[in-house]
Image (cartoon, rainbow, N blue to C red; front, side):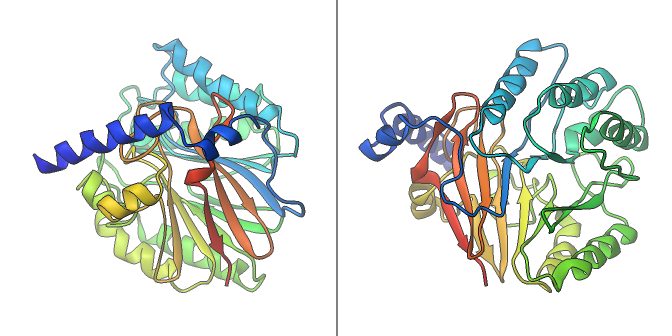
Length: 328
């Protein structure tokens, strides 16, 4: 009961902060252009999660396309568009195809880094879970303008020399409780080890957060990686400057207020690993800015990775929720 009351209080406070922003935020809202904050940005990426495209709800397709229009107008080239899962609402073929076609019709980023979520894998009704994963692979390969090809729903790729590893629930009949085969753990470890000697940050994209990070245990008790969590974390902690990007729990982008009251943040560093949990792009968020369309512009520099809060739908920055992670 108290958790529900706290959630309502946080939502109300977040809405007030958004509707009646501080003078710092209000001043920044006059600068709508999507552009890097500093010169010499080495990797410029837009990151969102939980788009939940549903062809039976066309407004969602418009909201997704509208956000990509913001990226198209960027003053600086965007190297990658990262979507951390739940690309669709039910994983059906028409909705998955619509998600990718909207991206293909928008020259918004040079590369795609897209992960499957539980709604893309476990909520499908027109195929098996394995069929849903194969459909994702086929559409990614068919419509991706960069020409990058993948063989499985979990894969690796390099962008500007930076390693990205995408993970997926590859169990059968696991629904909202992720499972990973031994092969995928080995793939994660080998992919990070292969790129570690470059001395550059490495990014792991997985729809579901690890247990107890970014407030997962407070927001959604069963919304983490469960039995997979310890194994994934043990691999991540072997390497320096690893960033784990997730979504799923529908928390909002938040800052000091949520951290002081509830004890968590959407950007946390634990045992040397940097965990970033993204808001839902399509549905109202909790414990932070509630609006849809929210995400981060991730800018990688030689000395830091900067996460700049932005509403891609309304083309507005929210600098009070920016996070900077210094590289070691």
